[in-house]
Length: 362
Image 1 (spheres, one colour):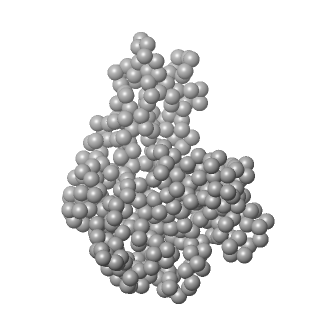
Image 2 (cartoon, one colour; image 1 turned 135 degrees about the vertical axis):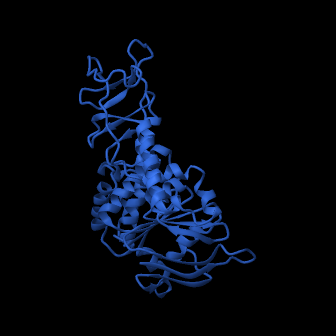
Image 3 (cartoon, helix red, strand yellow; image 1 turned 60 degrees about the horizontal axis):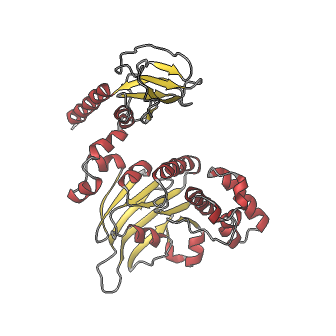
């Protein structure tokens, strides 16, 4: 879908911002450009829609050289989302979203109708359409930015660190929202970030750039974590890449055990009460977890750790146990109701078993 053929970008008097970039980006996938500041990842992204013109080399989209069409026309054919959303402050949310369709000659009524539909797509209430950007939270502004990029139904979506300016909780929500949208829309997405965790969560493929604009490795997230191409990639990924790699290891063998529960305001199921040193999982009437308590301890409800859903990775299973004050990870179903608990020691044993199987396969 998108091809870089020996593309270089040089600025006067300095070393190349991008140096001989050659890579193919698959249609309908999310490709993440990641690397330290000044490595050329944003420059590479912006050369796709000619916000930056390459010094040499060729970039094609669907086999057509991007220089074969006027730059303004090319940009209107692609969605673009930036770090600060870039919304027009004097226009309402609906009019911001309708910007590109209006530039493409769509009537105001039809463009606004499309904008209203996109509010639903990105998970925003239609009532927000009449507000102005300053009346929205940072996360809401970013969702509007994504909606605006989708308004003309472009096949290509360019995203330049779109979630870096929001807090971690909102950032994770936006990441999951993007994955949901991609499942439904199957766009060709090029996403820039400096965060390797974000890259491995979102990317079907990850391109790691080194300082000087060199492509250091281009592979699946699993391969980059398992087998970094060189010392630079290993250093950038970090010393805990083994833990991150668990995110690609299935949790099929994790056993879910009964857990002692107590319904808030009533006596609950006391099965296996000694499994976690007297800890009891406090749930509501619908069996949604609320936290942990120890009988006879007046400290009250203690917040629980992360939750584990069967079918998720070993990383999620282990994290649920390690982050829990009781040492038991809470397993829940798709509706968030308690299924039982997982034990950290058993998860670690499965991790070791998986490691030995990988070694035997080499």
